[in-house]
Image (cartoon, rainbow, N blue to C red):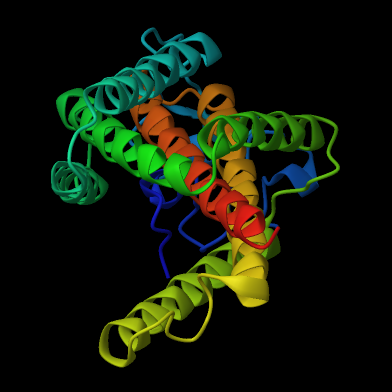
Length: 285
């Protein structure tokens, strides 16, 4: 099953359903036989970025020097742009005290734009920026509503999101977290299960009243919030792996927009889960 995050279904996965070559069986000319480029998802025979003619010595394409490839600076600058758009619009929605209806309308538009981008073969900067702007309006309205219930919860959620980002990045760079095919399957399975559980809870709440199955308040709500944050942290690790592979294997520069989109989606997920968790904890005081 593909991830809801469009970055995870991109070229970082090999045709053998492995994440960045982790599930590929050793073959003649693979890294196991002394070829360090065999597990490169951007050097597979079906890779549109692999150029040149076969190298008879190593049995791999002889790639000419290419320009316009993705760099860390590209990812950082585009992520800063998308997150900046989210923050600016959230602050505007907060300052203008926009109605809840406007916020949820913007949230629906953001969801549609995100889905459209997810099903496109190439990243479209206009769609990604549009998603960020609408998502910002939604978060601004939601944050203001939560702030009335739990004073200071939005700022605590922002700091918590930054802490999760830094913690996962450090764990990833020091290899405390190893992103492989098993990790990917577990993260995707956990996310699907979590979303189905929250959907069932919402349906029970809609037709039965109250909090449905109880996963939005009390002890179960706290456990669900912690699970949501942990799932977001796993998706961050997958994001980092995708960025690392794209830079290492020479993805085109436009892919940095997709990386920024994926990181923004994940950070928004973590923020909203932390916001809800903090509100539940404050209500239990």
